[in-house]
Length: 256
Image (cartoon, rainbow, N blue to C red; front, side):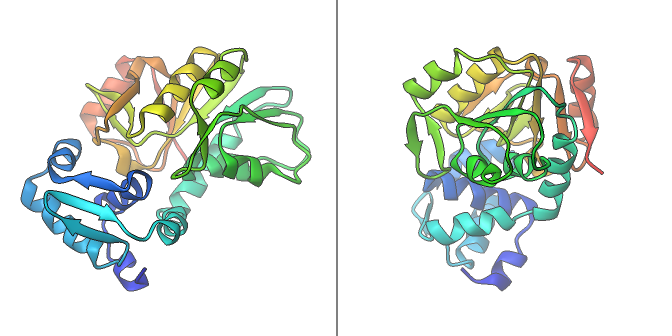
């Protein structure tokens, strides 16, 4: 992957690269709807992504050709913003609580900022979260299941059944998109199912996401606005979404 090309990506293009790294292929029609921009804009975005060397344009869309490298690069996209979000979110966790943290580059930061030896129990379906907590003297329970290779997350019936037997004081979930009409969404059906089960088992749900997810609509809605209690982000959304969050009773909290 070409570092100079990566540095020239705007927020929408960074998010597309992240999505491509998970799904392997994207269609122009779906991207146009998800990002609410013109087809010409999407074509220019894909041209820019192709310059990174990780993406190849095909008829009607683009495919991912640099998976392993791109996963590493994805962790570096908006790194400072995600770290701020993770630090703030971790500060919400109280000793004695049972916590679920799902997979993603922003939720990983929540685990990263938990202090060593904190008296909490963390349940996760994410290999990267479990690895991050290894050596911190924090009890970690993995729910098992089928490995989703693109995101290193455990999903499927076994994961869902195990998760459904648990109860959490609070959970931290990532989201790929957030709109007023579609709520919180994710591009993968299996991951969305795990998020839905976790929300049902939680006393409090916090969504951690950076500002590039506002206004994006992905395939599967896993919760309406009113289905969560808090959003932790690095920038507040535009007025319509901010007002809708307030009306739905969702606390929008800015990570400083």
